[in-house]
Structure formats: structure tokens, C-alpha cells
Image (spheres, rainbow, N blue to C red):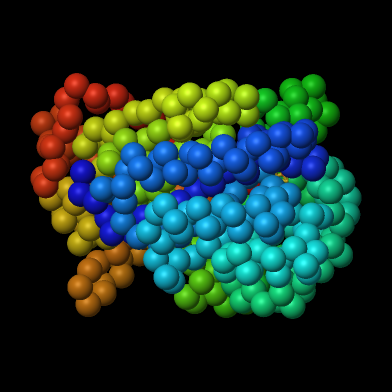
Amino acid sequence: MRPHPDFGIYLHIPFCEKKCVYCDFYSLENMDHKDVFVTLLIEEIIAIAKKYSPDVRPATSVFFGGGTPSLLSPVQISTIMETLHDQLPIHPDAEITMECNPGTISIESLRGYKNAGINRLSFGIQSFNQEELDFLQRIHSPEEGKEAVRIARAAGFDNVNIDIIFALPNQTIESWRSTLEQAIALNTEHISAYSLIFEEKTPLFAMLQKGLVKPQDEERDAELYALTIDELSKAGFVQYEVSNFAKPGFACTHNRTYWQAKEYLAFGPSAHGFVNGARYWNYRNLKRYFEAVRVHGTGEASREVLTDHNYLYESAFLAIRSEGLSKRRFLADFGIDIQAVLIDHLDADILAEFLQVVELQEDTIISLNASGFAICDEISIRIIGILEEVLGSEWDAKGYEEDDDSIIDLPILQEKTR
Ligand code: SF4
């Protein structure tokens, strides 16, 4: 597989003060093992750096996700950052993001994180309506959400994201419009606006099964999404993925690493990495993660090697949901003229109504327009279907070789909401 110069690092911090009703990310309310976790995470960084040292290029992004990374102290974050710098090449201009819960921060802690090297904050704010926050079982109030952004500015952060969620049961258009307006008024560089998903094995899913909550119908969901795109674009945000909107120049480098199917290392329980054409994932259980790191140096539970076909399909799927299909990249990486394939096989109506073709000086990008983002699942599935039809089983990517002994089919990645 052709190595891409960009490289990301993800660290999963598996603690939360209180589990939110909708969340299926791995985290524990019990924080007894926080110190042991940091010690073993550092051991894992050292082991992984050793394992991949010939292949790792300078990381252009580091992302502390979770869980709630802001439950670690500035000293702990600083120790982890020092280990990363000691063990792995980090680009001097790397974007270094930390997710924070507004209910767990102070000006002192944010200053400490900044001194540790964090240069981008991402706040899970979700809503500015107290009833909605109570329903989601968030630990902060609407005012604390706003205060978090003010404190971030006072601590010197000039790159801030907020996450908000729509399509909550009983949410009205007016309530969502109000959350959007208050989010825009905070003047952050980035907003992620997710549609609520009823993830299996969450308390919310159990409530759904018992008939205690009712999801918004598709029509209302589409209406809320259209309102989101409309309000955020009027406020100067550029949509660069289904759920992600950035002021010009502030698209998240780490998100783009995923969506452009580039490589990334991952640390911590339940974290997923992608290196040398293989995806690996760590144990989603703190005890088993600890045991694995103590015995093997890493928390890896399993791995899959992508076939050339799957790497192509996954690249196409992720690209169409985000910044679009680059003709130059698909020619260089796969030897395929993606524009010609789509023009020949995609219905002209779909091309005209939901896609746009942007001619750049050295490239052509085929991407979804606002109407296309509203039905991106259908369009991406259609495009993958076309690639399967056109390429059949004979296709072999140009430029790199398959390891026949280790090929396992991999389901295409699904985006998750936080
Ligand atoms: S949504 Fe965030 S704060 Fe809530 S349980 Fe999930 S990871 Fe923790």
C-alpha cells in the first residue's frame, strides 16, 4: 500500500464522570485506575513506537478522545505529550486536539493543557436547552457550555470546536434553531452537528425498545439537517463532511486523516489504528487492555489486512461523505479515472442534482452538494456498487502488492457520533 505522507495519532482516554444516555464509546465512571492507565498508556506508546519506527512519518495530528480526556490532569497530559515527542516524530505544526466536557474544566486546567502542547479544544456541548441536556444526562448546563468556550479563549486557544446534536426525541424546530443560533454566537472555528443515533447497547436504545422514547421521523430529521446546513453556511462555515462544518482554514486535520483513509496509530482501550495496510484495534475492556500491555507491550486485540479492493472501496466511501473524490488521487493510488467511471455509470439525474464537479488547477473533485449530503448513505452505497460492477474481481491496484496469506474482508467503516 502506498504510504501517505500524513499520519495521525489517536489516544483513547476511557473515563467519564457520568455516562450519557446515548453514548456507545468505551468509558468507565470508576476512575480508580486512572494513574495505572496513564502508566500503561505510556508503555504502549513506547512499544508501538518501537514496532512501527521504520514506517512512521511525522504525525500531522494528535487527538485525545474518549471518554473524557479533560478528566486527566495537565500533569498527566503533559507526561503523555512528552512521551509522544520522545518516541515518535511529531510535525512542528501538528494539530493537537483534546476533547473536553464543559463540566470538567477550569481556566487553570485549560492553561495547563495549553502548556502541555494542546492547541485545539473540542467541547461536547450538545445542546443549549436544559431539558435536552437533562434528557441526554449531560453533567453541564447550557451556561457552562458557553462558559467553557469563553474560558478556552481566555486560556489562549484560537482553535475550538463544539459538538451539538439534533433530532432528539420531542425536539422542536424552534429549539434546534435556538441551539444553532447560540452555537454560532460563540464564534468558534468549527462546529460538529450530529443527528442522534440510537446505538445498540445504550440506555437510549433500551428506552426505544420499551417504547419510552420515539425517534424523530425521517421528514423532521431531514428538516432539522437542512436547517443546520443553511444556518451554518450563512454564518460562514464550510461543510466538509456530513456532520462537520469549519470556518475557512479550520477543517480538522485529524478528521481528514480518517476520511482520506490515511494512516494513524492508536493507543488506549477500544482505540482503532491503521498502519501498513492493516487495521488493528485494542481491547474494549480496561482490565484486558492492562493485561495485554503488561504482557505484550500493546493493547491490541485483533487486526485485519485490507485487500486492495477494500482499501479502494473504503477510500471512495469516506471521500464521498467528506471532501469528495479526487480524480488525481484515484488515478495515482488505484489507476482509476473515477470521474469517467461515474459519468459513464451514474444516473445523469443523480449527477446533476446531488453532486458537483469542481475543476482545480491540477485536480478535479467530485463531491456532494447540500442536497447530496442529505442522502449521502444512498449515494455512497450506489457509488460503491458501481465500482464493484465496473472493477469486478479481476482488478488489482497498481503500485502495491497484496499479501495473499493475510487478506480478510473488512466491512466499510461507519461513522459514529459522539
Ligand atoms: S458522550 Fe462523551 S461525556 Fe458522555 S459518556 Fe460518551 S464519551 Fe462520556
